[in-house]
Length: 246
Length: 313
Image (cartoon, rainbow over all chains, first blue to last red):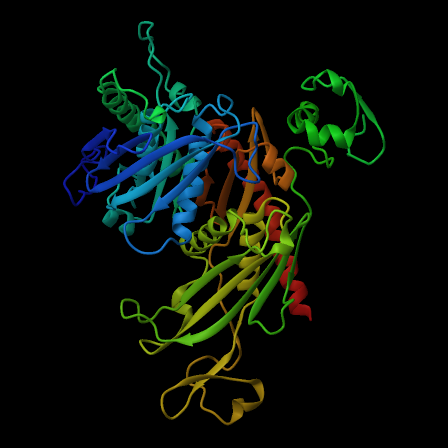
Protein backbone atom coordinates (compact mmCIF):
# COMPACT_ATOMS: atom_id res chain seq x y z
CA UNK A 1 0.00 0.00 0.00
CA UNK A 2 2.59 2.53 0.96
CA UNK A 3 5.75 1.00 -0.41
CA UNK A 4 6.46 3.66 -2.99
CA UNK A 5 5.92 6.60 -0.65
CA UNK A 6 8.88 8.75 0.09
CA UNK A 7 10.31 8.64 3.57
CA UNK A 8 9.76 11.59 5.85
CA UNK A 9 12.75 13.18 7.51
CA UNK A 10 11.78 12.15 11.02
CA UNK A 11 10.97 8.61 9.99
CA UNK A 12 7.22 8.76 10.41
CA UNK A 13 4.98 7.14 7.86
CA UNK A 14 2.38 9.09 5.94
CA UNK A 15 -0.46 8.71 8.41
CA UNK A 16 1.48 9.03 11.61
CA UNK A 17 1.03 12.06 13.84
CA UNK A 18 3.68 13.49 16.10
CA UNK A 19 3.32 12.79 19.83
CA UNK A 20 0.45 14.83 21.21
CA UNK A 21 0.39 16.29 24.70
CA UNK A 22 -2.30 18.39 26.31
CA UNK A 23 -2.34 19.84 29.80
CA UNK A 24 -4.98 22.11 31.25
CA UNK A 25 -5.31 24.60 34.08
CA UNK A 26 -1.74 25.84 33.98
CA UNK A 27 -2.29 29.55 34.55
CA UNK A 28 -3.77 30.55 37.86
CA UNK A 29 -5.17 33.94 36.92
CA UNK A 30 -6.78 32.95 33.65
CA UNK A 31 -10.28 31.52 33.72
CA UNK A 32 -9.16 28.71 31.48
CA UNK A 33 -5.84 27.69 30.02
CA UNK A 34 -4.36 24.85 28.06
CA UNK A 35 -1.06 23.89 26.54
CA UNK A 36 -1.08 21.75 23.42
CA UNK A 37 1.99 20.32 21.79
CA UNK A 38 2.46 18.32 18.62
CA UNK A 39 6.12 17.34 18.54
CA UNK A 40 8.07 20.59 18.82
CA UNK A 41 5.13 22.85 18.01
CA UNK A 42 3.86 24.07 21.36
CA UNK A 43 1.06 26.58 21.89
CA UNK A 44 -0.25 27.99 25.14
CA UNK A 45 -3.80 29.35 25.14
CA UNK A 46 -5.54 31.34 27.87
CA UNK A 47 -9.20 32.29 28.09
CA UNK A 48 -10.57 35.25 30.02
CA UNK A 49 -14.26 35.76 30.18
CA UNK A 50 -17.06 36.17 29.61
CA UNK A 51 -16.77 39.84 30.39
CA UNK A 52 -19.71 42.16 30.03
CA UNK A 53 -20.14 44.31 26.99
CA UNK A 54 -19.28 43.86 23.35
CA UNK A 55 -17.02 45.86 21.11
CA UNK A 56 -18.43 48.37 18.70
CA UNK A 57 -19.72 46.75 15.56
CA UNK A 58 -20.33 43.35 17.13
CA UNK A 59 -23.83 41.99 17.52
CA UNK A 60 -24.98 42.56 21.12
CA UNK A 61 -27.52 39.77 20.94
CA UNK A 62 -24.76 37.21 20.80
CA UNK A 63 -21.57 36.52 22.71
CA UNK A 64 -18.49 37.76 20.90
CA UNK A 65 -14.91 36.58 20.88
CA UNK A 66 -11.64 38.38 20.74
CA UNK A 67 -8.43 36.61 19.84
CA UNK A 68 -4.94 37.92 20.49
CA UNK A 69 -2.11 36.02 18.88
CA UNK A 70 1.34 36.46 20.28
CA UNK A 71 4.18 35.14 18.11
CA UNK A 72 7.27 33.66 19.68
CA UNK A 73 9.53 36.42 18.38
CA UNK A 74 9.12 39.50 16.32
CA UNK A 75 6.42 42.08 15.91
CA UNK A 76 2.77 41.43 15.23
CA UNK A 77 2.20 41.63 11.50
CA UNK A 78 -0.27 40.56 8.83
CA UNK A 79 0.33 36.86 9.36
CA UNK A 80 -0.68 37.12 13.00
CA UNK A 81 -3.78 39.18 12.18
CA UNK A 82 -4.87 36.59 9.66
CA UNK A 83 -4.46 33.78 12.21
CA UNK A 84 -6.47 35.82 14.72
CA UNK A 85 -9.38 36.20 12.32
CA UNK A 86 -9.34 32.53 11.32
CA UNK A 87 -9.23 31.43 14.95
CA UNK A 88 -12.01 33.83 15.91
CA UNK A 89 -14.35 32.66 13.17
CA UNK A 90 -13.62 29.00 13.87
CA UNK A 91 -14.28 29.32 17.59
CA UNK A 92 -17.42 31.38 16.96
CA UNK A 93 -18.86 28.53 14.98
CA UNK A 94 -18.42 25.94 17.73
CA UNK A 95 -19.56 27.98 20.72
CA UNK A 96 -23.15 28.58 21.77
CA UNK A 97 -23.47 32.29 21.25
CA UNK A 98 -26.96 32.77 22.62
CA UNK A 99 -26.28 31.59 26.16
CA UNK A 100 -24.47 34.74 27.28
CA UNK A 101 -25.45 37.58 24.96
CA UNK A 102 -23.63 40.91 25.11
CA UNK A 103 -20.42 39.46 26.51
CA UNK A 104 -16.87 39.25 25.23
CA UNK A 105 -14.55 36.30 25.77
CA UNK A 106 -10.86 36.89 25.14
CA UNK A 107 -8.57 34.14 23.98
CA UNK A 108 -4.86 34.81 24.09
CA UNK A 109 -2.66 32.46 22.11
CA UNK A 110 1.05 32.40 22.85
CA UNK A 111 3.35 30.52 20.50
CA UNK A 112 5.98 28.72 22.55
CA UNK A 113 7.50 26.64 19.78
CA UNK A 114 6.93 26.60 16.06
CA UNK A 115 7.83 23.49 14.09
CA UNK A 116 5.07 23.47 11.50
CA UNK A 117 1.27 23.01 11.79
CA UNK A 118 1.11 26.10 13.98
CA UNK A 119 -2.47 27.11 13.18
CA UNK A 120 -3.96 23.64 13.81
CA UNK A 121 -2.04 23.40 17.08
CA UNK A 122 -3.37 26.80 18.13
CA UNK A 123 -6.94 25.82 17.31
CA UNK A 124 -6.64 22.62 19.34
CA UNK A 125 -5.11 24.51 22.25
CA UNK A 126 -7.80 27.22 22.20
CA UNK A 127 -10.51 24.59 22.13
CA UNK A 128 -9.07 22.84 25.18
CA UNK A 129 -8.70 26.19 26.95
CA UNK A 130 -12.35 27.05 26.26
CA UNK A 131 -13.39 23.73 27.77
CA UNK A 132 -11.19 24.47 30.77
CA UNK A 133 -12.92 27.83 31.19
CA UNK A 134 -16.35 26.31 30.95
CA UNK A 135 -17.54 28.32 27.95
CA UNK A 136 -20.67 26.62 26.54
CA UNK A 137 -19.93 24.87 23.25
CA UNK A 138 -21.82 22.77 20.72
CA UNK A 139 -18.94 20.47 19.96
CA UNK A 140 -15.17 20.62 19.89
CA UNK A 141 -13.03 21.59 16.95
CA UNK A 142 -10.16 19.36 15.91
CA UNK A 143 -7.53 20.62 13.52
CA UNK A 144 -4.96 18.84 11.36
CA UNK A 145 -2.49 19.77 8.66
CA UNK A 146 -2.31 17.70 5.48
CA UNK A 147 0.34 17.95 2.82
CA UNK A 148 0.29 16.75 -0.75
CA UNK A 149 3.45 15.15 -2.11
CA UNK A 150 4.44 15.28 -5.77
CA UNK A 151 3.14 11.79 -6.52
CA UNK A 152 -0.22 12.70 -5.01
CA UNK A 153 0.11 10.92 -1.67
CA UNK A 154 -1.06 12.72 1.45
CA UNK A 155 1.02 13.12 4.60
CA UNK A 156 -0.32 14.34 7.91
CA UNK A 157 0.94 16.65 10.62
CA UNK A 158 3.66 18.54 8.79
CA UNK A 159 6.86 19.84 10.30
CA UNK A 160 8.25 23.19 9.29
CA UNK A 161 10.78 21.73 6.89
CA UNK A 162 8.06 19.68 5.21
CA UNK A 163 5.85 22.74 4.87
CA UNK A 164 8.63 24.62 3.16
CA UNK A 165 9.48 21.76 0.83
CA UNK A 166 5.99 20.73 -0.20
CA UNK A 167 4.25 22.26 -3.14
CA UNK A 168 0.87 22.34 -1.46
CA UNK A 169 -0.60 21.76 1.97
CA UNK A 170 -3.84 22.49 3.79
CA UNK A 171 -4.96 23.16 7.34
CA UNK A 172 -8.33 21.57 8.00
CA UNK A 173 -10.61 21.88 11.01
CA UNK A 174 -13.42 19.43 11.63
CA UNK A 175 -16.01 19.15 14.38
CA UNK A 176 -15.08 16.32 16.67
CA UNK A 177 -16.73 12.97 16.22
CA UNK A 178 -19.72 12.45 18.46
CA UNK A 179 -19.66 9.84 21.20
CA UNK A 180 -22.60 7.52 20.79
CA UNK A 181 -24.10 5.55 23.65
CA UNK A 182 -26.09 3.30 21.32
CA UNK A 183 -24.19 0.26 20.08
CA UNK A 184 -21.97 0.99 17.11
CA UNK A 185 -23.70 0.68 13.77
CA UNK A 186 -21.37 0.44 10.80
CA UNK A 187 -21.09 3.91 9.33
CA UNK A 188 -21.10 4.31 5.59
CA UNK A 189 -18.05 5.92 4.03
CA UNK A 190 -19.79 9.22 3.32
CA UNK A 191 -21.19 9.75 6.76
CA UNK A 192 -18.22 11.27 8.58
CA UNK A 193 -17.68 13.90 5.90
CA UNK A 194 -21.34 14.81 5.81
CA UNK A 195 -20.65 16.85 8.88
CA UNK A 196 -18.38 19.02 6.83
CA UNK A 197 -15.33 21.12 7.49
CA UNK A 198 -15.40 24.15 9.72
CA UNK A 199 -12.29 25.76 8.35
CA UNK A 200 -9.97 25.16 5.47
CA UNK A 201 -6.85 27.15 4.62
CA UNK A 202 -4.68 25.97 1.75
CA UNK A 203 -1.27 27.02 0.52
CA UNK A 204 -0.02 26.20 -2.93
CA UNK A 205 -1.80 24.88 -5.98
CA UNK A 206 -3.06 21.30 -5.92
CA UNK A 207 -5.37 19.27 -8.14
CA UNK A 208 -8.97 19.11 -7.00
CA UNK A 209 -8.77 15.36 -6.40
CA UNK A 210 -5.74 15.94 -4.17
CA UNK A 211 -7.77 18.27 -1.98
CA UNK A 212 -10.52 15.67 -1.51
CA UNK A 213 -7.86 13.09 -0.65
CA UNK A 214 -6.62 15.44 2.05
CA UNK A 215 -10.17 15.80 3.33
CA UNK A 216 -10.60 12.03 3.62
CA UNK A 217 -7.33 11.53 5.43
CA UNK A 218 -8.00 14.54 7.61
CA UNK A 219 -11.35 13.19 8.79
CA UNK A 220 -9.78 9.87 9.78
CA UNK A 221 -6.93 11.57 11.62
CA UNK A 222 -9.28 13.95 13.40
CA UNK A 223 -11.21 10.99 14.78
CA UNK A 224 -7.98 9.89 16.46
CA UNK A 225 -7.19 13.37 17.74
CA UNK A 226 -10.69 13.88 19.11
CA UNK A 227 -10.36 10.57 20.99
CA UNK A 228 -7.15 11.88 22.55
CA UNK A 229 -8.76 15.24 23.32
CA UNK A 230 -11.72 13.63 25.02
CA UNK A 231 -9.49 11.42 27.15
CA UNK A 232 -7.24 14.23 28.27
CA UNK A 233 -10.17 16.53 29.06
CA UNK A 234 -11.84 13.91 31.20
CA UNK A 235 -8.74 13.28 33.27
CA UNK A 236 -9.16 16.45 35.33
CA UNK A 237 -10.64 15.98 38.81
CA UNK A 238 -14.32 16.93 39.18
CA UNK A 239 -13.81 19.15 42.24
CA UNK A 240 -12.33 21.93 40.15
CA UNK A 241 -13.90 25.15 41.30
CA UNK A 242 -14.70 27.78 38.74
CA UNK A 243 -12.00 30.37 38.47
CA UNK A 244 -14.35 33.06 37.29
CA UNK A 245 -15.85 33.35 40.76
CA UNK A 246 -12.52 34.23 42.40
CA UNK B 1 -44.43 41.73 -2.24
CA UNK B 2 -41.97 43.28 -4.68
CA UNK B 3 -38.77 41.36 -5.04
CA UNK B 4 -36.37 44.14 -5.82
CA UNK B 5 -36.41 46.14 -2.57
CA UNK B 6 -37.66 49.41 -4.06
CA UNK B 7 -38.65 52.26 -1.82
CA UNK B 8 -42.39 51.80 -2.20
CA UNK B 9 -44.35 51.40 0.95
CA UNK B 10 -45.15 47.78 0.24
CA UNK B 11 -46.19 46.00 3.34
CA UNK B 12 -45.41 42.48 4.33
CA UNK B 13 -48.11 40.60 6.16
CA UNK B 14 -46.89 38.81 9.28
CA UNK B 15 -43.47 37.36 8.38
CA UNK B 16 -42.55 34.01 9.96
CA UNK B 17 -39.59 35.24 11.93
CA UNK B 18 -41.21 38.53 12.94
CA UNK B 19 -42.70 39.17 16.31
CA UNK B 20 -46.26 40.35 16.75
CA UNK B 21 -45.58 44.02 16.22
CA UNK B 22 -44.23 43.41 12.74
CA UNK B 23 -47.55 42.41 11.30
CA UNK B 24 -47.64 45.34 8.84
CA UNK B 25 -44.28 46.83 7.99
CA UNK B 26 -42.34 48.47 5.19
CA UNK B 27 -39.89 46.39 3.22
CA UNK B 28 -36.87 48.45 4.20
CA UNK B 29 -37.70 48.31 7.87
CA UNK B 30 -38.23 44.55 7.71
CA UNK B 31 -34.90 44.21 5.94
CA UNK B 32 -33.08 46.05 8.70
CA UNK B 33 -34.84 44.58 11.68
CA UNK B 34 -35.13 40.95 10.60
CA UNK B 35 -32.41 40.35 8.01
CA UNK B 36 -32.41 36.56 8.27
CA UNK B 37 -36.15 36.07 7.69
CA UNK B 38 -35.94 38.64 4.89
CA UNK B 39 -33.30 36.57 3.13
CA UNK B 40 -35.00 33.27 3.92
CA UNK B 41 -38.12 34.50 2.17
CA UNK B 42 -36.11 35.37 -0.91
CA UNK B 43 -34.05 32.18 -0.88
CA UNK B 44 -37.15 30.00 -0.70
CA UNK B 45 -38.08 31.45 -4.10
CA UNK B 46 -34.43 31.11 -5.28
CA UNK B 47 -33.83 34.80 -5.83
CA UNK B 48 -31.92 37.47 -4.03
CA UNK B 49 -33.05 40.98 -3.07
CA UNK B 50 -31.25 42.45 -6.08
CA UNK B 51 -33.15 40.05 -8.38
CA UNK B 52 -30.13 37.86 -9.13
CA UNK B 53 -30.42 34.09 -9.09
CA UNK B 54 -28.41 32.23 -6.50
CA UNK B 55 -25.56 31.32 -8.80
CA UNK B 56 -25.15 34.45 -10.88
CA UNK B 57 -22.43 36.95 -10.18
CA UNK B 58 -22.71 40.70 -10.51
CA UNK B 59 -21.61 42.57 -13.60
CA UNK B 60 -17.84 42.65 -13.78
CA UNK B 61 -15.80 45.23 -15.68
CA UNK B 62 -12.03 45.48 -16.05
CA UNK B 63 -10.26 48.50 -17.43
CA UNK B 64 -6.50 48.54 -17.92
CA UNK B 65 -4.16 51.46 -17.51
CA UNK B 66 -6.14 54.01 -15.47
CA UNK B 67 -3.00 55.12 -13.61
CA UNK B 68 -0.67 56.57 -16.23
CA UNK B 69 2.31 57.02 -13.92
CA UNK B 70 2.43 53.36 -12.90
CA UNK B 71 4.10 50.68 -14.99
CA UNK B 72 0.93 48.58 -14.88
CA UNK B 73 -2.49 49.27 -13.47
CA UNK B 74 -6.06 48.07 -13.60
CA UNK B 75 -9.46 49.06 -12.24
CA UNK B 76 -11.92 46.26 -11.55
CA UNK B 77 -15.56 46.59 -10.62
CA UNK B 78 -17.67 43.66 -9.51
CA UNK B 79 -21.10 45.20 -9.00
CA UNK B 80 -20.35 48.07 -6.64
CA UNK B 81 -17.07 46.68 -5.28
CA UNK B 82 -14.23 48.65 -6.86
CA UNK B 83 -10.52 47.84 -6.66
CA UNK B 84 -7.61 49.76 -8.12
CA UNK B 85 -4.31 47.93 -8.55
CA UNK B 86 -1.04 49.53 -9.61
CA UNK B 87 2.45 48.12 -10.08
CA UNK B 88 5.67 50.08 -9.92
CA UNK B 89 8.98 48.46 -10.78
CA UNK B 90 12.23 49.31 -9.09
CA UNK B 91 15.70 47.94 -9.51
CA UNK B 92 17.25 46.14 -6.60
CA UNK B 93 19.97 43.60 -5.91
CA UNK B 94 18.60 40.09 -5.70
CA UNK B 95 19.14 37.90 -2.67
CA UNK B 96 22.04 35.46 -2.60
CA UNK B 97 19.81 32.37 -2.40
CA UNK B 98 18.04 33.23 -5.64
CA UNK B 99 20.32 35.47 -7.68
CA UNK B 100 18.33 35.21 -10.87
CA UNK B 101 14.88 35.95 -9.53
CA UNK B 102 13.06 39.19 -8.90
CA UNK B 103 10.43 39.62 -6.23
CA UNK B 104 6.92 40.93 -5.74
CA UNK B 105 5.76 42.94 -2.73
CA UNK B 106 1.98 42.99 -2.29
CA UNK B 107 0.12 45.57 -0.21
CA UNK B 108 -3.62 45.89 0.20
CA UNK B 109 -5.18 49.06 1.52
CA UNK B 110 -8.70 49.79 2.66
CA UNK B 111 -8.87 53.55 2.99
CA UNK B 112 -11.86 55.10 4.78
CA UNK B 113 -13.45 55.94 1.44
CA UNK B 114 -14.42 52.34 0.89
CA UNK B 115 -16.85 51.69 3.68
CA UNK B 116 -18.61 53.46 6.54
CA UNK B 117 -17.19 50.86 8.93
CA UNK B 118 -13.61 51.97 8.27
CA UNK B 119 -12.26 55.08 9.99
CA UNK B 120 -8.74 56.54 10.19
CA UNK B 121 -8.35 55.27 13.73
CA UNK B 122 -10.22 52.05 13.17
CA UNK B 123 -8.67 50.06 10.31
CA UNK B 124 -10.71 47.32 8.72
CA UNK B 125 -10.31 43.91 10.27
CA UNK B 126 -10.23 42.13 6.95
CA UNK B 127 -7.51 44.26 5.35
CA UNK B 128 -4.45 42.31 6.60
CA UNK B 129 -6.25 39.04 5.93
CA UNK B 130 -6.91 39.91 2.30
CA UNK B 131 -3.39 41.26 1.97
CA UNK B 132 -1.93 37.99 3.20
CA UNK B 133 -4.28 35.93 1.03
CA UNK B 134 -3.37 37.97 -2.05
CA UNK B 135 0.36 37.47 -1.67
CA UNK B 136 -0.15 33.77 -0.91
CA UNK B 137 -2.24 33.19 -4.02
CA UNK B 138 -0.02 35.25 -6.32
CA UNK B 139 3.03 33.27 -5.20
CA UNK B 140 1.48 29.81 -5.15
CA UNK B 141 -0.27 30.11 -8.48
CA UNK B 142 3.08 30.90 -10.11
CA UNK B 143 1.31 33.38 -12.31
CA UNK B 144 4.45 35.46 -12.64
CA UNK B 145 7.73 33.71 -13.34
CA UNK B 146 10.15 35.45 -11.02
CA UNK B 147 13.04 34.65 -13.35
CA UNK B 148 11.55 37.02 -15.90
CA UNK B 149 12.03 39.83 -13.43
CA UNK B 150 15.78 39.35 -13.47
CA UNK B 151 18.04 41.84 -15.24
CA UNK B 152 21.65 40.87 -14.54
CA UNK B 153 22.00 37.63 -12.66
CA UNK B 154 23.34 38.30 -9.19
CA UNK B 155 23.54 42.06 -9.63
CA UNK B 156 20.22 43.57 -10.58
CA UNK B 157 16.62 42.49 -10.74
CA UNK B 158 13.19 44.05 -10.57
CA UNK B 159 11.07 44.27 -7.51
CA UNK B 160 7.41 44.80 -8.37
CA UNK B 161 5.50 46.80 -5.78
CA UNK B 162 1.88 45.84 -6.22
CA UNK B 163 -0.54 48.12 -4.38
CA UNK B 164 -4.23 47.34 -4.37
CA UNK B 165 -6.62 49.98 -3.12
CA UNK B 166 -10.20 49.23 -2.22
CA UNK B 167 -12.31 52.16 -3.36
CA UNK B 168 -15.71 50.70 -2.54
CA UNK B 169 -16.30 47.67 -0.36
CA UNK B 170 -19.49 45.84 -1.22
CA UNK B 171 -18.69 42.18 -0.75
CA UNK B 172 -16.40 39.77 -2.62
CA UNK B 173 -13.40 41.94 -1.79
CA UNK B 174 -10.85 39.22 -2.36
CA UNK B 175 -12.32 38.38 -5.78
CA UNK B 176 -12.03 41.93 -7.02
CA UNK B 177 -8.58 42.37 -5.49
CA UNK B 178 -7.13 39.27 -7.10
CA UNK B 179 -8.75 40.08 -10.42
CA UNK B 180 -7.28 43.58 -10.37
CA UNK B 181 -3.84 42.21 -9.48
CA UNK B 182 -4.01 39.74 -12.38
CA UNK B 183 -5.17 42.47 -14.78
CA UNK B 184 -2.43 44.83 -13.62
CA UNK B 185 0.23 42.18 -14.27
CA UNK B 186 -1.25 41.56 -17.70
CA UNK B 187 -1.01 45.29 -18.43
CA UNK B 188 2.50 45.64 -17.00
CA UNK B 189 5.15 47.01 -19.35
CA UNK B 190 8.72 46.69 -18.19
CA UNK B 191 10.59 49.94 -18.88
CA UNK B 192 13.85 50.14 -20.77
CA UNK B 193 16.95 49.92 -18.72
CA UNK B 194 20.66 50.32 -19.28
CA UNK B 195 23.89 50.26 -17.30
CA UNK B 196 26.14 53.25 -16.81
CA UNK B 197 29.91 53.20 -16.31
CA UNK B 198 29.87 52.52 -12.57
CA UNK B 199 27.69 49.50 -13.14
CA UNK B 200 24.53 51.12 -11.82
CA UNK B 201 21.33 50.23 -13.55
CA UNK B 202 18.90 52.99 -14.37
CA UNK B 203 15.73 53.31 -16.35
CA UNK B 204 15.79 54.97 -19.72
CA UNK B 205 12.94 56.83 -21.33
CA UNK B 206 12.05 56.42 -24.97
CA UNK B 207 13.99 59.35 -26.44
CA UNK B 208 17.37 58.41 -25.00
CA UNK B 209 17.40 54.89 -26.31
CA UNK B 210 19.68 55.55 -29.30
CA UNK B 211 22.59 56.87 -27.24
CA UNK B 212 22.99 54.14 -24.65
CA UNK B 213 23.90 50.50 -24.91
CA UNK B 214 20.89 48.40 -24.09
CA UNK B 215 22.43 45.12 -23.20
CA UNK B 216 19.76 43.83 -20.87
CA UNK B 217 16.20 44.16 -21.93
CA UNK B 218 15.09 43.72 -25.51
CA UNK B 219 14.67 46.84 -27.57
CA UNK B 220 10.93 46.93 -27.06
CA UNK B 221 9.36 47.44 -23.65
CA UNK B 222 8.69 43.95 -22.50
CA UNK B 223 5.58 42.32 -21.19
CA UNK B 224 5.58 39.56 -18.61
CA UNK B 225 4.36 36.19 -19.80
CA UNK B 226 1.56 35.32 -17.46
CA UNK B 227 1.42 31.62 -16.66
CA UNK B 228 -1.64 30.00 -15.17
CA UNK B 229 -3.97 32.83 -14.27
CA UNK B 230 -5.84 32.31 -11.01
CA UNK B 231 -9.52 33.24 -10.91
CA UNK B 232 -11.37 33.52 -7.61
CA UNK B 233 -15.00 33.10 -6.65
CA UNK B 234 -16.46 33.76 -3.23
CA UNK B 235 -19.62 31.95 -2.19
CA UNK B 236 -21.71 32.25 0.91
CA UNK B 237 -23.29 29.16 2.45
CA UNK B 238 -26.60 29.45 4.22
CA UNK B 239 -28.31 26.22 5.27
CA UNK B 240 -28.54 24.35 1.99
CA UNK B 241 -28.25 27.35 -0.32
CA UNK B 242 -25.05 28.48 -1.95
CA UNK B 243 -24.96 32.11 -3.04
CA UNK B 244 -22.29 33.14 -5.51
CA UNK B 245 -20.67 36.60 -5.32
CA UNK B 246 -22.27 37.99 -2.16
CA UNK B 247 -22.81 41.67 -1.48
CA UNK B 248 -21.57 43.12 1.80
CA UNK B 249 -25.02 42.77 3.31
CA UNK B 250 -25.26 39.10 2.36
CA UNK B 251 -21.80 38.43 3.78
CA UNK B 252 -22.73 40.04 7.07
CA UNK B 253 -26.07 38.27 7.45
CA UNK B 254 -24.97 34.79 6.41
CA UNK B 255 -21.65 34.57 8.09
CA UNK B 256 -20.14 31.57 6.33
CA UNK B 257 -18.14 32.35 3.25
CA UNK B 258 -15.86 30.14 1.19
CA UNK B 259 -13.44 31.46 -1.43
CA UNK B 260 -12.17 29.11 -4.13
CA UNK B 261 -9.39 30.04 -6.50
CA UNK B 262 -8.86 27.92 -9.62
CA UNK B 263 -6.25 28.49 -12.27
CA UNK B 264 -6.63 28.04 -16.01
CA UNK B 265 -5.28 24.47 -15.84
CA UNK B 266 -8.03 23.50 -13.41
CA UNK B 267 -5.77 23.23 -10.38
CA UNK B 268 -7.05 24.33 -7.03
CA UNK B 269 -4.90 27.24 -5.96
CA UNK B 270 -6.70 27.94 -2.74
CA UNK B 271 -9.76 26.96 -0.76
CA UNK B 272 -10.24 29.48 2.00
CA UNK B 273 -13.01 28.95 4.48
CA UNK B 274 -12.22 30.84 7.67
CA UNK B 275 -14.60 29.20 10.11
CA UNK B 276 -18.20 30.32 10.09
CA UNK B 277 -21.41 28.89 11.40
CA UNK B 278 -22.16 26.62 8.46
CA UNK B 279 -20.13 23.49 7.76
CA UNK B 280 -19.05 22.67 4.22
CA UNK B 281 -19.61 19.07 3.29
CA UNK B 282 -17.87 17.44 0.36
CA UNK B 283 -20.97 17.87 -1.79
CA UNK B 284 -21.06 21.59 -1.03
CA UNK B 285 -17.40 21.99 -1.90
CA UNK B 286 -17.87 20.15 -5.18
CA UNK B 287 -20.82 22.39 -6.01
CA UNK B 288 -18.78 25.52 -5.24
CA UNK B 289 -15.92 24.27 -7.41
CA UNK B 290 -18.25 23.74 -10.36
CA UNK B 291 -19.68 27.24 -9.91
CA UNK B 292 -16.13 28.58 -9.85
CA UNK B 293 -15.31 26.80 -13.10
CA UNK B 294 -18.28 28.38 -14.82
CA UNK B 295 -17.48 31.85 -13.53
CA UNK B 296 -13.87 31.39 -14.54
CA UNK B 297 -14.91 31.10 -18.19
CA UNK B 298 -16.80 34.40 -17.98
CA UNK B 299 -13.90 36.13 -16.25
CA UNK B 300 -11.43 34.89 -18.85
CA UNK B 301 -13.52 36.39 -21.63
CA UNK B 302 -13.84 39.71 -19.79
CA UNK B 303 -10.09 39.86 -19.20
CA UNK B 304 -9.27 39.05 -22.81
CA UNK B 305 -11.66 41.73 -24.04
CA UNK B 306 -10.07 44.30 -21.76
CA UNK B 307 -6.61 43.38 -23.05
CA UNK B 308 -7.68 43.61 -26.69
CA UNK B 309 -9.29 47.01 -26.10
CA UNK B 310 -6.01 48.16 -24.58
CA UNK B 311 -3.98 46.97 -27.53
CA UNK B 312 -6.16 48.71 -30.04
CA UNK B 313 -5.38 52.09 -28.46
